[in-house]
Length: 302
Image (cartoon, rainbow, N blue to C red):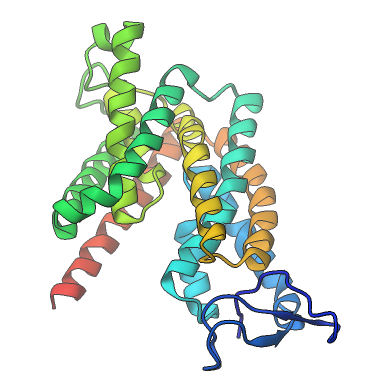
């Protein structure tokens, strides 16, 4: 069984390390375990990281849709430690994915991405307060509605139908006016950051649909820009989890190593796929996530 470790060698006993966090053997924090417990699973952690990196970079988001359920199944980490460990892998995807999209296809809109990024960082701070004032059920219901609308719109676009007409909800005057566009993007970033933090979600599932629906961005550009927006939040989140000891650095670093490789593959795959095919893939993924959220809500109420 995997355990959470920090590098704290005991000089009197070579080959073992002190574990920090919740014990899985009932001995409480600080129990002693064999370092081989992690080393035996390096290929597994790297493989999970690669898959998470491919999915994250391909869809403009983090690794959580892969790493969180995998860690939940393979370890006895507390939920907070699972999220914290996954956040380390998200840093690798955000960095490698941003560079990859920018260099390979120029598929990053920094004019919109930077205000979104700044607003998202501020919104993340407000997220904890938001979840205290607004019931989680309400937040998740609105989130599901956004996913359903975005997923439906992307699939319709993939079929060659544009129900909006101009391809964007925001009028051209807003999108073309630099000052107004920056203001709107920053405010949208605050909303997305707060919403994501309140629900414990990565921002990609909100950022990509927002860029497509509101600004009429192509999906390649929306995904590349989403990774830019995700970068500071993922770094802040990972550092925070590490400092408060709700992340396993040995496991997270191995996930991140695999995710970095996977992100390269994900970017190359995304840029090689035609726009309409990518819209179909992302639309189907978003609708799948919406259905999963609906089932989770029903399970909780049932």
